[in-house]
Every structure is written in C-alpha cells, then in structure tokens.
Image (tube, rainbow, N blue to C red; front, side, top):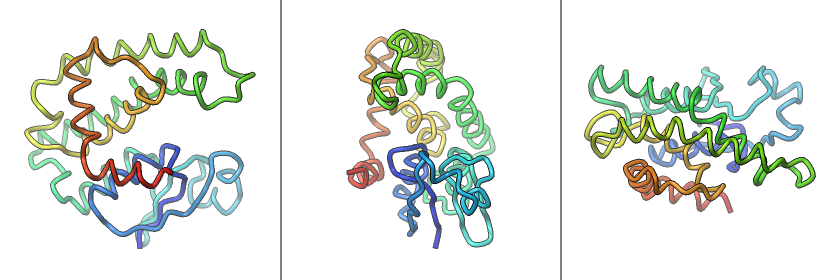
Length: 201
C-alpha cells in the first residue's frame, strides 16, 4: 500500500487530495514538520527533512507536486493529460506554482496564521499578499477555458489549486481575478477535495 508521510495541515494535503481524487488506498504515516521530519529514520526517507514523502512499492519520492505528477500518471483516472501538449502544461503549471506562487503566499500564511503571535510581522504578511498578485495576474490571463491543460480537470489544475488554496486560508480577496476565483471554486468543489477537508478535522 502507498504510504504518505506527513500531516494533513501541511504540503502533504496536496498529495492527499490527489489520492482522494484517484481513490487509491493509502496509509498516512504521521510526521510533523515540527521535530519529526529531522529524526534520523525520517531523513532516510526524505534527506531534505521536509514533508511530505511517499513510498509506493520500491519507489520513494519527495516534493509534493512531483509526487502528484507521478500519481496522476501511474494511476490516471483521467487526471493525467491525454496529449503531449497537455503533459507539457502539467509540468509547466506545477513548476510555476512552486517558483512563482508558493513563496509569497507562504510568507503571508506564516505571518497571518502559522507563526507564534510574537513572531508574526504584519508588514511581511501584507507584502506577501501584495506580491501574490503578480502571479495571479499571469494565471488570470492564461485561463482561456475551464481548465489549465485542456478540456478536463487534470493534475495541472490540482497542483496549482492546492497551492492557491492557501489564499482562502489567509482571507485573500480574489475578486480582482474573476476567472481565477471561478476556476479555484470549480477545483475545490470536487468530491476529492471534500474528502480531503473531512480528514483535516
């Protein structure tokens, strides 16, 4: 059985969403980003000391969006694009989500919610939210139809939406990006996402 190392309220949520979409059986092995991921046994699984990690048979993977690309391709269920062009878009948007979107959103999230109150900096939170608007403008301009890599929901959409969903956690107003807001709503209305949320408690 597939093993996912992590906790739902972390980047592991991205992988759990994918597995819920695929409805592939898995075991969640609780590993917290506070302390657990630096233990020697876990460092043998992910030497970076981060969560999540995945084991599927003899294969061990880290990096949440790469894990999702693998799962979508291996187990498919319609989440892997049907054309080479669609595959290229899946890779493009997954890398884009990590390089352009995640850092400013994470900065805002940390300084609004996750850090202890005495370590939060409202200026850094505001700056992170402001900087998020640049990649959001790119996404808004690229959304030509319902989905990012063709006419169907695929791993491209799941990976970007999993990162962008942090915007809702920090209460970011997306109304200036109506196509993006509607697209994110379509992504998070899926039953797989609902199953993920139900496991977050």
